[in-house]
Length: 515
Length: 73
Image 1: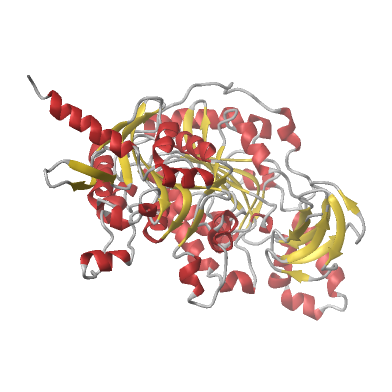
Image 2: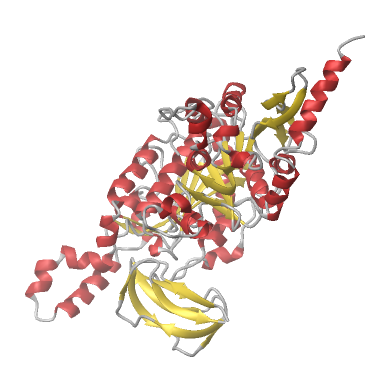
């Protein structure tokens, strides 16, 4: 006789754990349109790859004879599993057990998941539902005391940002510590209608005199525009797809390099329409995403934070199979001008690219910082200055393509000018400290004030100055290195990605990533 | 019938309004331009319908997300 009886008890306890918060609570979870934490883990990971850790941790009740009468599992399920064959750590809140709150938690499970990701150098995916192990006044009664709050495991949570890819998925109403765990990541996703993210929910907010629904307070509209959450999707399945896809561009940790994906597109492909992508009328906008999709590997464009800081596009993509970080301007918003929000978005994105050794490709059409009282009130220059600092601290390979404008301080920030100017310009290039329109009034104020017909003189000056605006005159002086046929952009960017690949250096970077 | 607010994508000055109240508009159709950073930023209908309100006229200053028009349909 060996240990069969004990193994039988182990299996019984594991079976009880799989029952989660019981039939009724699971039914409630489903009727809310939500999957259970175990279904989520199963759908996220490669089939059958989940190796659970701490499954039988929970709260048990025993009879007089020491027999197990009842078992409530801890409301955090975690372990290791694989995504596209690569091992990750996954940890999810079980909302069916006390709404995921701390009073039914074994806090050290969350800490263990974070520490495991850190020490084994594995990406971590957090499936957040509820308060994510946050406090509840119920503990006052059960403990007979209160406590000075601290954020358990936060040392690992922060250390992980500088070490491994961290993904947060909001899969329900997420508040307090849960919201904080979600956002302390490199990439966060919420599901429209199912997920809301806030510091505190409507009942607490009601005490401030504000009566709002969960959706009005922290729905996907609010969170995607505020930049609290990066991406909004329509279903949990789509959220898992996003997590898998995001990780596919990244190394397992900063100690490795981003892996080359399959080469699925012709590096020499030249799309004819690019010759007319930029309208000759400088006042007309165009579709930068279409340009990006055309020059990057087909179907590799993966945008992050589309609804936030909308004058700037940030995305992951591939060039000849190599993962790259992509920045681009979107003239449909503020003419592509940098706002406070787009500066914050860029700072975070450049730091992210640096952390995971992703070469940067930047398609530039920047008229400068947005100007005016609204821009000043938002502290645009403060946030812009931080974006510039991130840019000058970044040491990943960097290639800029000036597709149209580069004006002022923000336009200058298309690259760190002290590094080799790995840079191309399209013939639609238009640059300077200030554009001629508008700049004339500032530079020729005295002259315009002195003439009888200032409008006529202004037009004359504009015509006169415009003749110097040709990008060929800049190239004559080698102040821009190369003007290219827009159709050659993809082959040249693929060459860049191949030249950049051996230059990437694994390891930790300084300064460390902040969410 | 659902009504949809058309919001300004940008801060700027309304330069041209292409449509009048009562006009039918198609999805993605440009309703007006808001000028910002010397560019004409198109404001397009997110869905097809009828323009039931127009809150701005050329020359008006607008802020980001300001409601410019309402479409019903």
